[in-house]
Image 1 (cartoon, one colour):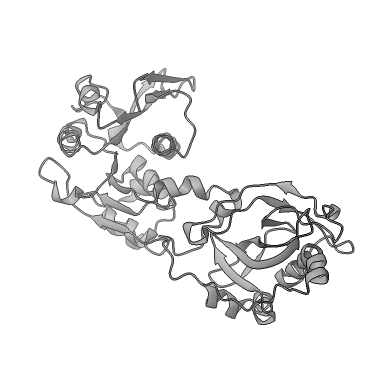
Image 2: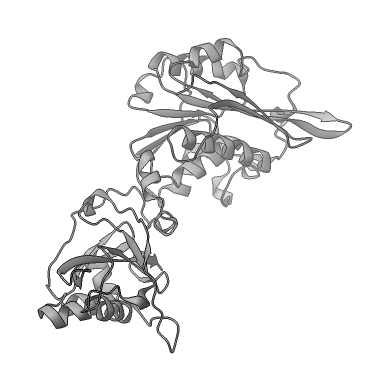
Length: 397
């Protein structure tokens, strides 16, 4: 990453050539060895952090005119806090590769004439003159250490830089998902959207299982474009070609999951069951309960009401501790309903997407990404009045 960005961004190359200790972490440029004075006029060294916005895999631009700083408030040669930095407390989480950098504040200082910096070189030079100027004058030091701090490799599963996470400053929350190995059983309507959402989360691995072929009706309940050559292929083949360029850690198998599929699920830590046949659920449920794998089951029940479609969207969480109990309560159908109009492949992509959204949101609540005020283990959304009925478990972890 270091050499790629230096080679393809002239402004960053100029910073390195001048001697700044440039490194990259969590889609940020990290510049160590920045001298400054504290309130006691003592020499300290801080770290400048600036967010990167990736134009493509090799070129970057500025996020805005602001920077972040690891250190206390910089002072002038009188020990007075420098006034024109708009110094404010701020936290910004970097990865464990930069555990020596604890961001404590943000600075904002725009160029007076243009209101924005031309590039990173101008930006860093401007801030260093303000932050380090007093220390450079008093102690004859400078930030040009020519120190190379390049971290080896990257643990990212993505083939593109995850700038969304860094810009939103939620890297600490995304890290909670990284160790999960996810199984998705069925990529019809709802399962296809679950896959689309999960592909864009930093989970370690996603395993997709579906035995069916991809037909015209699937394209109406599927995110992304459909190519004429996709029709008639196995669904797993279509989705593999659709997502394999985006990230690593994907596997697609055209197999039917039932109680005999233990080997396929070895190492799985969470699963989504997205099948439209109640009879298919029983074997899948029994397997997950036996293997002690927590999972979310989704379901949709539609019927005509006064000539129009009405019905419900269900999301049910089966935890390791209470999965068997919830299965025995019949919260999800394990038998086929001959009157379920969904089986006729009516095109209802928006309901599939909503069902998938609720399922993935619930998964992220379980993992501590989203806040959850009450431990909901089942939600049922009614199409006709947009109401939501939930079941709570006060003893749920």
